[in-house]
Length: 623
Image (cartoon, rainbow, N blue to C red; front, side):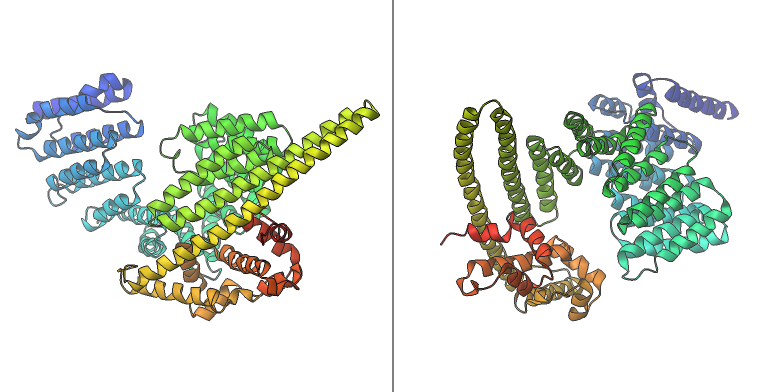
């Protein structure tokens, strides 16, 4: 008996040694053929499987065939540990083959084979393996489900610190899914545990999560108290890791409030407590610092920070941080007029994002940021490439969120407006360069000046016609979009009349009612004409709170309150411009009528939405 156990332990150590000391081709047979028979051996196997998962070791049909061919050695012994190991191996093979749902099925089989009542330790280890499996997929729902099983199974009843970490993990993943109430619930479950165990690092983590939740789910500013308490506790501990985490979160809070100078100040404090300069945590903070520098228009700040991130990211093999740093370098060179260098780093940023399988087709914001930098250079061809990518991904996300028709129409609207903007700016840019060129040539002779001036006037006239034609087309497209919007509104109204809109109970009905009343205020009562209208006043009018109102606006209109307010005002302004009975009104009079305090604000909003100024729009209206 002792000899058998000794041989088993020796074999398990041999397997782990080979796994960590040899490459994939040598360890493949070991991880597939090693059949654990004890709890310790199962733990070691799960650790090795997790190691393969973290290092993206690929599997194929040969691995499946080899495992299935060896199936009898797992099941003929009658040892449930061996059977659970077999299902765990099947789970990782399907995970690596991107068959995630099948992987979860085999994970469930392993859990049922090794229930908590039979072996709490093994059951816990399989659950932990499942959490790592789901983390690889960024599958928050499955992670939360498995973590809740850890709690409900009772396997952590004797380990309050581990249980607190499980609660905080659930809170963290819930926050990432915008489930703020559930996240706050599990923070509150963790607090008494961390307090009783004097687990202060856990308490700081809970307070920071509670801040993030409160920031998005309350209308007051009491969320700042969580940051104050976390900072006080971190200073008492004098723990550099905790201080860095708290200072980073304070910096992020200022970033959210668009106070970039204060954000940068706290990001610097956070980085000063990082033990490993140039490490992953330091560079993660540096990326946010670079973003705040760019929002604050600090050219030199972006220059130094992006260079630091790139240098250390390459040196320490932290590949994921490079994309945002390349974008920062491109922005810096664009702002300093170095077009070639800006273009070089824009392409590097694009190539880097394309190399990340999980992000290349889900980064509309990143590609739009590249588009904005390309417009600074300006390189309209490159800008169009990034705009196309961003628009296509926004469309895809919109479709996946069950808003195909309206989302695609809005994406098309923005896309067409930006296309018109590029076309218009391209013409203007061409005119500018042609004019400069002709002025230089004119210096050689008076005759050449006369001839070129004549040719230039002809060119201007032709391009002016094109520009006017472009403006008229833009007016038509705005009018066509009005028709499309009215058709969508009619379809939405008919859908509600037929009872096909929602069937999810009272909360959905409340949301529908609020949305309906909101539409009445805007479209029938024209509340947007009130120049002092704010989301708080609108919420009071609708007898709700600003947080819920913002949520409904974002979900139903897929835009912010400010955006829909400007659209309603500008749409009425366009109708006024198209109606002869208001011909006596000035532009300032129209702006005041639809709810604007100033001419400049009206002009800015009108041009952003239609692509034209009010005067250009009026001049290009067809009788």
